[in-house]
Image 1 (cartoon, rainbow, N blue to C red):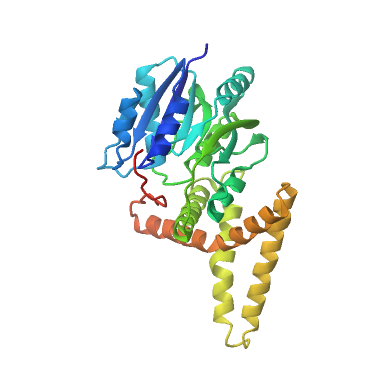
Image 2 (image 1 turned 90 degrees about the horizontal axis):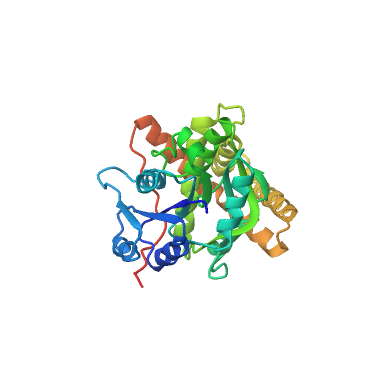
Length: 334
């Protein structure tokens, strides 16, 4: 049987980490857990389950990309013959059927270097924000441009492009996929259950920080690869700047001279944007209620995303170290 490596990364994931590690452990699977400064007993939990444990050096700013690279290096030391590596976040558990489905796709299609499947939210009805995550995970099946944090990759391809960019605080998976595709590899999403995710986003502030992080990712991704033939994330970044900053500033600046008409036009523009997103969501075969929810919050998300774009470029111009944007609350170990 093919030997598979698994890299699980986490920080203060509590009982979610236990479920994640238990789902990763199995015959012909070597598992490594990489901890990024947890204070909830995650390291001790992982050690008790008998998996390899790596604690990141806290004197160096940690990122998910750096954690995954470190886990992969440790995995190679444990078993240099591993052909495929499954990356998974510590707030996700892997569905048992996934292993055979993913390996079959990779073994039968040598041009495919990354395979991912369907990620589902475990408690979509616990909050609006959890429901939004569940909608976000529902992406098209077939050849794709990028994967998320949960994916199985061909080790040779991953090594050939140097792994993840350890300096990115967000958006490291799509950035890696850009380089993999430029090297001739293909990314493929199959119609198979892959992971169950537990977002635990229950507060508006958490949603705002998560959206801010997305804006930062779009900004950095377009800065790195926007000049490539595919113009990586340029369209998304331009949209964020226009809807999240430029248009509202113009409307406010001209409100006095237009006797408030510019503000009415601004409201109309946002309603039109929301309707366009709603139509796009319905084409994805979302229910009407999910399409409305998704459209409204996508429109609102332009504002924290604009903040994230600004923060990235300010940090870049001032040559400041970018730091991780955390939106999760610490959960106790169970």
